Amino acid sequence: MVDAAILSQWIVNVGRREAKVRIAHLLCEMASRLGAPAAANSFSFPFMVTQVQLADATGLTTVHVNRVLKTLREDGLADVRRREVTVHDWEALVAAGDFNPNYLQADIRPDERLRIVQTA
Image (cartoon, rainbow, N blue to C red):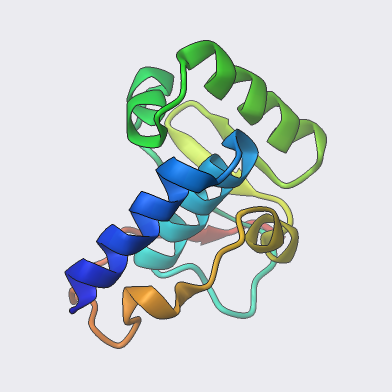
């Protein structure tokens, strides 16, 4: 059921959402899966994904991904650099990505999660 819910979200993500929403949604999903602190609005997490891989995952070109990442940075939402994502405004990123974490079934998580560092 969880896999079907995730697949459904990804079909919507690639098929119906605009580029900024796709990438914001992906960043929100990754942060949620890695255990983003619920009370923190600003934090960082490791992100070992290249722009080429991000383009493949979202059905965009690398040029478009680069432009969207620049927009997210300029809007003060998130910064993707040096194999790390720094979320500056979690609530705004969630809104930009039309993200609702319920489909991830947060109560079903692996025991080990990568370390997320609260930044402010």
